[in-house]
Amino acid sequence: MPAAEATVTARFTRSTPCLPLQMLTSGSGSVAPSPLQSEGCGENEYQPGETIVLTATPRTGVFFGGWSTTLGPVLDCGSCAAATLVMPSIAIA
Image 1: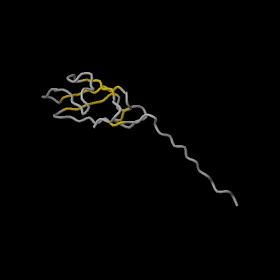
Image 2: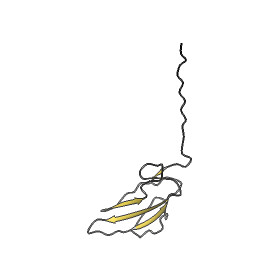
Image 3: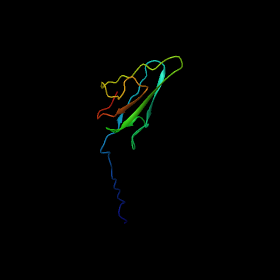
Image 4: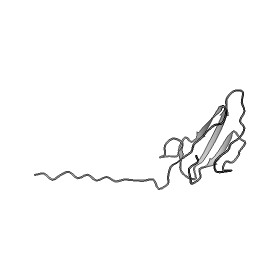
């Protein structure tokens, strides 16, 4: 009789987590992140320490009024339509 086939699976886990960045808008406009994600992460997911440029674009007839976050002053410019965020080590919801 032949021996039974054996299967071995190697599992790999990221040493640095991918954390979600939830971008919401209040009023009429949109927010675009650059880059869209950290390498190896899903869309809108970033590794801690990743630098993300957020660009707010108001719809016609409205203006950009500023940023707010759940973590306090983590943006380099709270009143600029394009602001830089360094992803903290916890998720931003």
